[in-house]
Image 1 (cartoon, helix red, strand yellow):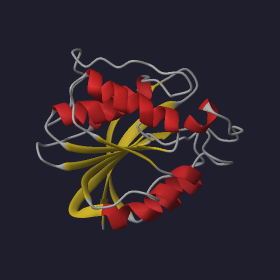
Image 2 (image 1 turned 45 degrees about the vertical axis):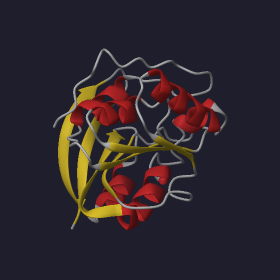
Image 3 (image 1 turned 90 degrees about the vertical axis):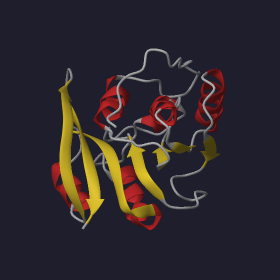
Image 4 (image 1 turned 120 degrees about the vertical axis):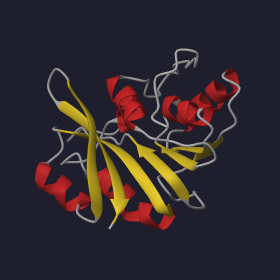
Length: 191
């Protein structure tokens, strides 16, 4: 079922954790999630995507490199009475198992110096480095019919982006024009 923004889900914003923004909601609205599917919310931040998937009946594992985001997502899951496994990990380093659905709103702003909250959007010199690392490991954790939803931006280097996405069958979902960029979501499947 396609996700819709559920106003009954309460998300507390936490200090030094990426809060839900336009990109979070665009990713959420682009996703198709079914009850009992195993879902991975990579880079969960405050947990907004995972909470919606959990409420839709998915079995959610939420992951973030920021320990404050792990705490924030755990608190928001408790607040919303949603059962979710929440893991502190640098991408797939401490993640086990295979998933039917993965969602990732990667850091994609080029040339941002990493710091606490800046890590949430620092995408390397071309804006694609974190996404590239994620997509290199994702197939090992994707079920046979699994799909990946990723948020992309015109701030990313297009040539590098096309190269990173070349191993997947791509379907462009929703897009949105913001002040200085266009963002969109693509659904990816293995070839």
